[in-house]
Length: 266
Ligand SMILES: Nc1ncnc2c1ncn2[C@@H]1O[C@H](COP(=O)(O)OP(=O)(O)OP(=O)(O)O)[C@@H](O)[C@H]1O
Image (cartoon, helix red, strand yellow):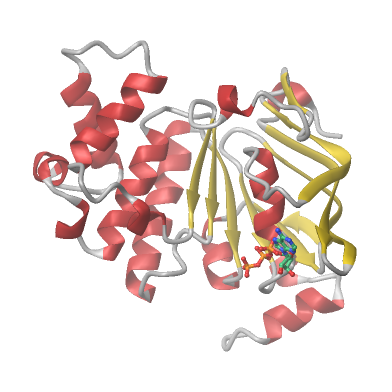
């Protein structure tokens, strides 16, 4: 178990099972991982390895047929979540931001970007006055690399490109000033150049704000760029974990070696 005083997220022996027509199956098997302030944990693995199921349990978004069979997830030390009975409404949004794959395309199409940001600030930031709202929104958009935040705030989602929408969805998560951000394949739907831009912005965000980040990806190159440590998942289990540079340089597990070998430059 990690030191809770400096740990934003502590996943300890998490096991998640699914009830299916064919019986019970284990999707996440005894997974442990932790994230501290300014750390970026990469959850890496091929499709179906259990990455999404793991992070969705942190914010109480498991599907109905899934149950936490063992283990524990705690967020911010004192806010301990028993994933079965946690007060997720208290932590989701305010303390833990969540950006998922294609989040940019699930923005409210009928609301201008500024109105969507205002709604989040109203719900989660009692410290922001009415008068301070416009500056807060501009700051959130500028933080995601928009040089013309006023225009973006006045735009409807369909007036923006896919990459811009994805950056807006990260701004929506970050404007609540969460201590922890979970980004689940948040760049997968973007072209390679835009992916790099978003990863650079996330890297800056982490170093400027000290937020902890869980970066879920199957892309080792992106992971190497942004993650301070990585946990490699296969068939629901963490097969290898360590500082990114160490794992990349000297992978201990055969599966990690195979993943690295499948990347052209390796
Ligand atoms: N509600 C569910 N009921 C049954 N099986 C599920 C359910 N949700 C996910 N699974 C299965 O659990 C396994 C892990 O899925 P998960 O989405 O967590 O993997 P992943 O590593 O995030 O993959 P991807 O990158 O494709 O999203 C997969 O085999 C998936 O089919």
